Every structure is written in structure tokens, then in C-alpha cells.
Image (cartoon, rainbow, N blue to C red):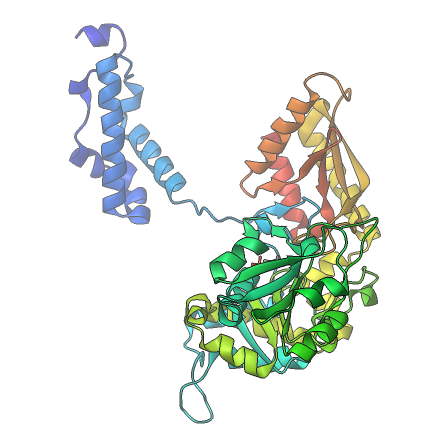
Length: 476
Ligand SMILES: *Cc1c(COP(=O)(O)O)cnc(C)c1O
């Protein structure tokens, strides 16, 4: 045949699908992926071979049964690789929204594992045998920790704000300072959420200054709520004035108008105890007289994704009856994780050890420095002459809108292209960043000032060896 003379195979040389499937080269793939997937993948491969034969580019090597087996196994392995994968968060942002925010402590992991495979009293009252309320699993703890009268839990804080507004402010007015009309990443904007909840936003004050009189003058017959929103991801500085919660409460009270506060991160503990900057706690906000407070479960609180609404009993009761509550409710895995996390707060003396988020936020710089010094030589060796690697001080952030301007002194690896600042060094750094992301256990850092920074704040001792292994894979 002409094709053979040229070293190429023709369509007639293609083996049959059934004959290939019977060969030993396919038995492992059949056992792992099943007949349906292997047949489909093989058919696909044969189609590609046929097309190559017609184009005159099909080589005889391609047609060996072992080659078919290897290609099919490879394709199926890739196709069945999990899309949600663990990564190393070396970005320096501890609560990184795109990397899943808070990491759960071991007690929560164990509780989730149990809830995954065993029936549980999610909505079942073990005392009476009657129907229970899933909120009751955590509401008493939330009240104990925050001083609120009642509490309910939904899917996230955005849902908490939406549900609160839809219940209490439909077709009515909600007064918010212009300085607090925040946009959180991922299209959560206070004005938009108002619209979707059917509430009318009444903006008061200016971007930089809002006075008590602004709130006072805005109250009318249609006012459903005065609302304060935490400026999570920005700071207004300079010539500024805002009205604190206690004062807003004083203004609202004579009118019988409730005050709601969207705290965003909402910590349950005074962070200054651990040398961190102060962030308003939920307790303080309740104590200042707020009728309702909403906050996230997976930001500073350090738990699973969830949104809490804590506050006045009558208002929470109304909120719980709204049909949206059913649509926004949390699943059992969330509640399983949340309860032990909340319980950790009863023991503040062990909190920094046991609550992963707080442990990471309070890590000693010296600890990260030692890690950096241990890891730097291995990385330098993997990267070779083209880059310089040094253990270097750097600054981390809390992330997720908690204390956006505060920085935590940290330590890590600083990687710069050798010969610094030359043309093409930006490209060299971007290439390295891509290579780190492509590792089996992707390593995520950040580029700034012509340097790739790998902040080790979130690298706990147990994961250090795995990171070192990834660095050696980089060389391969
Ligand atoms: C983060 C944040 C939200 C959204 O919370 P999620 O739990 O991410 O839905 C809402 N409001 C404020 C002020 C926030 O900081």
C-alpha cells in the first residue's frame, strides 16, 4: 500500500473497537472506569485516528493496542480528576474568598464526617419525639455568645441581609448612610440587595460625613429600618463623620423603628486579646442596642459558609416565617460544622490554638521565618539559575473584608528573576506563577514589585513536607 511506503497507516489498518476492548491493555481501565466510559473514550480515539488516516498523518505506532490503552486511560483519568481541589494558599490573605475562606478546625471536620453518613436529629426533637427546628441546634449557643434574644441561620450573610430586608422592609424605607453603601466582591451591593428584597433605599449623609440629624430627618411613616453596614473592604479616612450604632438606636427608638446592623465579618471575640487590631464584635453591637445583627460564618468567625441573624425575638420569629427562609436555609453539614466551632468560643483560653482561623492570624513571625529558611534552599535548587529565592519578611492580610487596611507581619519566600529588573523578567515571573498553579497540589502566591511572594502564614507544620515535595516536582 502507498501509505505503508511512506510509513503512514490507512483507515483500513484501524483495529475494531471490540477486539481492542478484549485486550489486556484495557482491563485496568475497564475495572476503574467501567465499560460505558471506556467504550466512549475508545470510540472517540478511533474517530481521531480515522481522521488522521484520511489526512495521511496516522503513524503505525499509534495503532498498537498498548498505545490505545494508554491514551484512553490518560483521557479518562483527566476527565475524572476532581475539579474542586486542595491548594496551598500562600497568597498572604488568610480568609481568601476565592480559595474558600475559613478552614475548619478538626472538631468541625469530625462532626461533618459523622453527619455525612449517619442519620441525625436535624429537625427532630429527641426529648418529645416530635418535629424539631434546625435553627435550635445552634441558636442557643449563638444567643449565649452574642447576648441576642434569638437567632436564625441561612446560607450566607448575603442571604441573611436579603431575608431580613424582605421580611421587615418590603415596600417600605430603609435608611442607610451614603458612606456605607458597600459593594462586596461577587456582585453583592447594598442598593441592589434592597431592590431585590423589595425595600426602598433612603440614602442619607454624604460619602464622607453622615450626622445624627441626617438619620433623624429621614425617619417617616414608611421607615421600616435604620440600617448600618460595615465598611468591610474599604476605609473612609480624612474629613469623616459617622454615627455609631448606639446613637442610631437613640434616634430610632422614639419612633419604634428597629435598627439593623450588617456586620459583615462579625467576630465573636475581642481580637485585641491576641494582639490583633480590634474589630467590632457581635456582642458589642447587640449591647449598643441593635435590634438585629447579621454576619458571616466563614469570615473571622472561622466556621462554615453561613449567614447568622441574631437579635430581637419578635423580629427573628417573623424572619423565620418568611417563605424565603425555607429557600435560604442551611443544610445539615453546615450546622454540623457550625456547632462545634461556636462551642470553641466558650473557652477563649484555648481559642487561638483550636480555631484554625485565629491560629493562622496569630502565628508568630519567627515561626514562619524558620519555615521560610528551611524551604528556601529546596526551592532555589528546583528553580536553578534563572531565579533567586530568599526567605523574606512580608505582610499578610486578614481578608474577606475584615480590617481591610490592617496588615499582619509575616514571613515567606520571595522569588525574583535572576539579574533583576531586566526585560522579560515580568514574563519569567508569570511563567513561574503558572507553573506553581499547574502542580498536582497547586501553589498559589502573589506577584508584586517584580517579585513572586509565597507567604507562609497559612502553611501549617503538617503541610510543610507536602509543599517541599511540590517544589521538587517543579524541577521535574
Ligand atoms: C462579606 C459581607 C457580606 C456578604 O457575606 P457572605 O457571607 O459572603 O454572603 C455582606 N455584608 C458585608 C458588610 C460583608 O462584609
